[in-house]
Image (cartoon, rainbow, N blue to C red; front, side, top):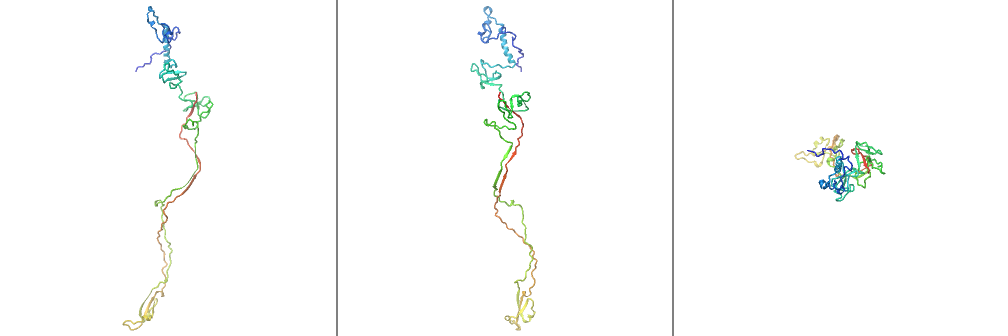
Length: 357
């Protein structure tokens, strides 16, 4: 793509060596220029194109030189990147840029003598200050890889620079050089706040925990069978049971009848007794009396039962308890203490505050 960049350089003003009489700068009005002279208002007048025999006036060499000198002065200025100064006699459109004093302004709203002339710096809605500092007074900014220097050894020397910027002071609580002090941000975190609260400090790296006392009763609990610890019960009666038994009141008695000839044969627990009531003759007998033959075990009872009585008995233990729940009363307390807090992971940067210009 072809470029429109000028192929030639304008090295100086055209007619730069000529004086005012040889290079007359065209005046604004034709009346100021005079008859037959070049002006910004009319350019060359009609009289300059008439033949001399008809009263024409030839163009002046000094006017040509003056025009070239005037135009080249602007071209040379623009060529070197210059911007024009503001003039109240000119109309400006949005986007136009001018210098006012030492600062550059850009037009935001059309203004000038044809409407209302507004000088740059007087209304921010009409002219934008392109050279206004991006950091305004009071703004605090962190800087990396910087150094300290300047008038009090606390001024910013930015990365890659060798001279301190006196407008920036380290936020260490020291003097600002203007009768006050800058904020002390050393080992502190910043906490956003309202304007009214700005400048307040607080916080601590220690956590205070007050003493606590707890009193109460745990909820009622009924243990289930599964919650009772596994266990068993065993037991038996004593094996000491050795004893014996005598006859006591026990006895065995009995009798039978026979004639008197058998009475001499009785002995031991057996004995005979003539019982008249029983003296009868047996049918078909010889008429002899009958005797009662009796048996009484107590007459000859001896000995006792065995003393061997070792034995045991299985036992079944009965259960008791209502199966109701129970509670525990607790009382606990702790003493007040302080715990040192650690900071979260951090990276240190030096903070500087911008002073007023």
